[in-house]
Length: 377
Image 1 (spheres, rainbow, N blue to C red):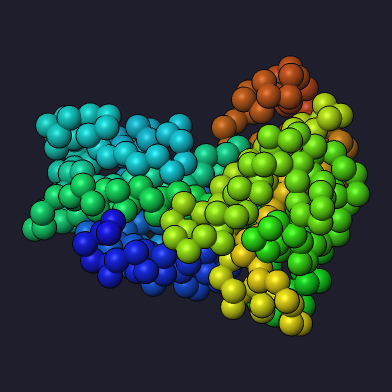
Image 2 (cartoon, rainbow, N blue to C red; image 1 turned 120 degrees about the vertical axis):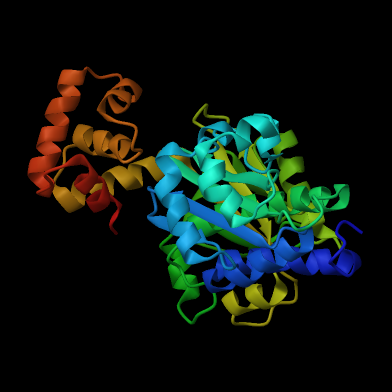
């Protein structure tokens, strides 16, 4: 048993399934987050995701006073904890004590003016949910000064659930704005710019969207062998099938994962996300009866296609040139004109010209206004 407030292994597995359900139905997140908080002994949780590329933005703190949440947001520019966790790998668990001593923390204005009045212990459990091209996400479970500190079992449970939260957020980002269980679900998956597959325990596809079909036809990174998913590289193929099979295991606490599929043409690897899918959810997307049971969602992203789709969208919407569209995508990351110019390998003067042209074509006056406009769908 990993946690003291769940009824054994079945309770943990039920919570894992609920996490993936929430990725497919965002309305379920508050309840799931509260269940995680109760299970690990830190009932007041904060879940935040911001993805400028898709427009996905979520800040959930179901049990925390909204006034406290607003004050926390006000503290963001001066919060001494925020810079400390940046760069920590998604799924890795850390606490305040991972970076500074308790005395150093309690001496800060942030602790005295926000943390202590909130009544929180100085060692919350935290994990990054994503760190990717300007996108950020974090999950924190707060213990109370009135409760015992987190125990070893609670920390292990948080670490196990953190891995699933990371994968669920990755799934939510890619399916954002799509309704999974609806009459038009299959048509919706065909609008995705990623390959989407529902597969059984033997990695045999039960449903594939148009992008997945094209990737399979290209036989460059992703392929079919004996009717099941595999890869151009034999080791990659074995790992892909192992991740799929893990989603069917009776004790699927460590189910799914991410994988880069190497391509024999030398192009950038395909990025693959494998996540378990509850049977009732899969059957909602497959409105006919199938003899094989869907156990996993496989999402495949081609970095080249993904970038080209973003560039084409900006060119169509605002009449930007290819170079201006590329610069606009870099500006959205929010770290300034110089950083954007450095990533593209252009001079500051060229960057200034691009930005001026983008302002004219979009009707924007300031960079913050431009970023908001570019994030609109």
